[in-house]
Picture (cartoon, helix red, strand yellow):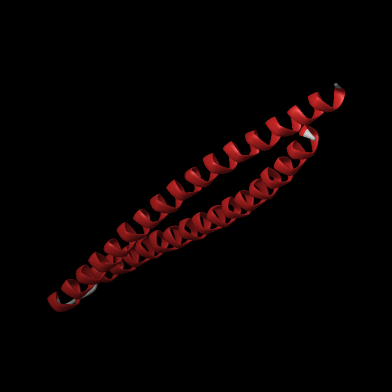
Length: 120
């Protein structure tokens, strides 16, 4: 009787562990995607800065320089926002990881208990 109840609990814990593993995997993929977007924005910023500095040597108008600075400010804002997104995604991954680990430990504990009861 006790063994049957433990086996039912074990199935429930296994299902929960699998569900949380899937959630964790999705969170990790979201974080990776956000990091890739940040890396692209930073590369674009560096590329744009290099290009605009090269153009400054030419006879550029003050208006073009102001436009370039304004655009660079907008890119900097985008980078700052993306850094925040990456940070939030990382926090989500850590939270999901902790939940999954707790679930996994619960599942393993019940499996160990079932093994012990089965030996009696």
